[in-house]
Length: 467
Image (cartoon, rainbow, N blue to C red):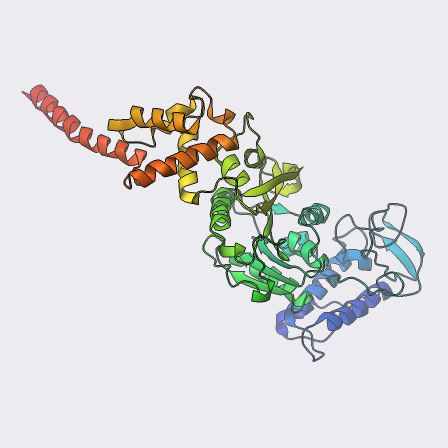
């Protein structure tokens, strides 16, 4: 390693252990191989992290100061009895006194000849990140803490992040946008999947240095955007040659993210509106999404007719997309542990929506129906109309849509909602002011009219008491 300036003087070590010297030499060779620069001087960030790994080994902060310090948690450094290193393209052998070291079994297994990744004969090895600190070490190195007000929870188990990425499908040479990468757990799994380009949209500036380290480890593949995904314009996020017709197969573009709980619902509603209008990230075609939600929200998204979790989200998502609840991640897998479990949901936009009406109209009808979810559905339909003609218009709508007014909102099928929306659209065409009517605004106006009367009555009461 090069003798760096005073900024890294505290990180230097002088340990005569030949294993650490071998690891130092291998780390430097790997860094030079993957570095985007052509000169031989390491970047200060890469130098700092390499020295951080070596210092961790010397200080005894890990169980064994072997070169497998940079390996992912739970992964075996070679082929062994624990069978955690047998996955194709993920087996790595490292020289430790001419033997393979297994981090899981905490012992050396068998001699090795070479100091290289194993790959099938005649095939090039798949892309893998060079030696990097683990996600937990990144959190400690940059003193990162999850902020409760931002609903942040870190997923450190890379086996789970790999499982999330596999739900997105084949990502070889794909273009991916990750929402809220945080310390970069899912980011590493996406890069190891062999993507062509990865766009990271992160709002919290504390995570940017750790993401820049991943960007340096995968030159030309990572692009970092500091901003809010709710306001970020994704129409120009990817090259135009990736665009496909809506009727064709989905484009080679994916959206993946471990969403904060306070953002997940408004964000999916925003993207569902983009699906309806075919703008935003869906200008490229039927872009697929793989996102995490609270378990209860995921159940609402995928609830069937008659289910207890049937809600507005169920109708709005299922009439526009094929929604699949992939699997559940227990809360104890996150740091800090949330009070609820988390589910991974996969969305694929439909070629034709099940309700052929504008998004705003469908949302208004569905939201009104579920306004009183424990009452008959006709009670929710009533608030679509002004009070002076409410009963007449409600009866007319229910009869024209052929919907039983005594059904509960959770019992209505997709065809029922389609009939309600189509009939309501005809009534709005006959009365242009009908769609602009807002039930909540009418309640506010009534409240304002009542408040001056109550104020005058209070003043009279106070005056009488005074006399």
